[in-house]
Image (cartoon, rainbow, N blue to C red):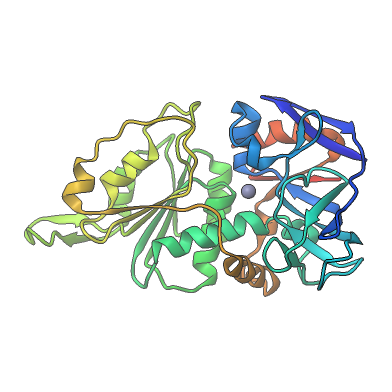
Length: 339
Ligand SMILES: [Zn+2]
């Protein structure tokens, strides 16, 4: 079978490899669509996280953990799944014609309802990450929310916040790409800020209302309740670190910062305001199987529209081009590989 095999930074090749044979507890999925994740890019550029992102072969390994397909073979010990079922799976190795998956139904394998296309199904993993991050922030009625980063996770957050109808006051998205910000608006952001052109803090202070400081009511401060950092730290970006901007922006006492972005290195932060304002920084990573089920429901009921975030589709033969395209934030959002 054909597969995209990763060997090292910026070295991915589409090659002929052995078709996998399944164990008793596994299913064999014929892959229909597989997304490139932000974490795949950290691997592609710097070899980070390869251990968890690859299905290892004798030489190199096959990436891809955001995929859907049809069940081709079922191991004798697998229950609840049959040949021909449409499924989404959450293990590595999806950038290939076939992938073997140890099958735990409704945990790492989900049946794909007919209303959800294979392409949308391939975006269940990032959508579930967005859902999880959203819940970590505990958004509630009347709050102002700022999302840094309009990639698949940030845009998924916009969709989830809108789908859940929480009645937040203002939903503001910050990014460096007008293309991505335009999609954020289409998905329901109230305001967008291009940090290349405008200082986010100055702009956001104008967009939200001001409230009296609890300790000194004669003084007022912009109300920024939740900040989602879907950027983290990328070596190639020279601008100010998003987490620092978030600390400086968050409201006294009520401010929460949910960090989903990956950090490609150590950063230095001034945390005077974190202490003085008594704000919370919360890490977010992955999701529960319950959250994946809820996200799948959002897809099935069309409360979210992931087709808007799918920007490119490449055949397996062009895996290298697909990764390079995913690196260009001004052009792409979610790149899919279709074996
Ligand atoms: Zn992912």
